[in-house]
Image 1 (cartoon, rainbow, N blue to C red):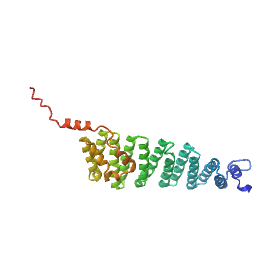
Image 2 (cartoon, rainbow, N blue to C red):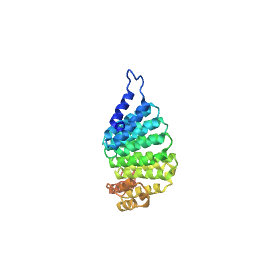
Image 3 (tube, rainbow, N blue to C red):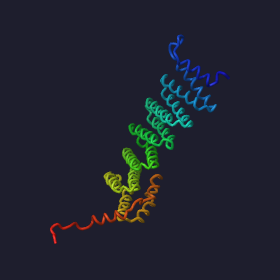
Image 4 (cartoon, helix red, strand yellow):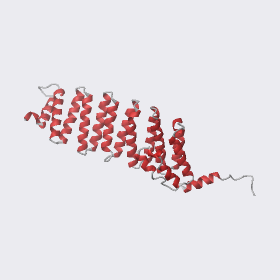
Length: 296
């Protein structure tokens, strides 16, 4: 049927949005309906490129007729098609635009969800962009005092950092997760995030930074009284004593088993460096200092 030909629907819709001698104002309401019908037709025909274009125009139309929610939905649909087409830049742009439109609606949760969808779509192809989208998604929820809803996002971003071997960034994001958990009294998540950050530093054998992280986190009363803190203390004792077998034994403990899989995998590989030097250093520090008065 000619009236349902998506190409003809697009042409008709485009005409309604153009000004002419006989049309002094654009009819975006009618055009938007036609763009939506065209998008459905193109999707049925599996012409995803044209369907994506129709959805972009439908989104613009919904925005112009003051329906930002519907505009956001169309942008998300366009982003999903861009993913099918492997157009990664458009995936990021469309999900960001959808998020902005949800913000206009005053809805931080779907705005964050849109960014998270974009991040998940880009994890394998453009991981750095995925991390930025996850981070921005977290910010939306943090700014709206919905930190607890961001826990899966902290986890996802940390996982990507670890895959990219950006361990310092991973540890920093885990600490950020711990702070968010503190804000909403999620003490178990807070303590696990802090311990996870310590383990990440130990995995890269940055003992000094791991100790600093442990000392800083121990200033937080909730962590200082936790099983995770006691475990970390035992782990550092094993490192100080250069006890490889004890480190390996601790890495198999139930405390580690209760952490996220990405951190468990790192913990299972401890120690990753030479710990005998740490024992020597500890022994040297315990030696009696030189008596300056004894010059014999």
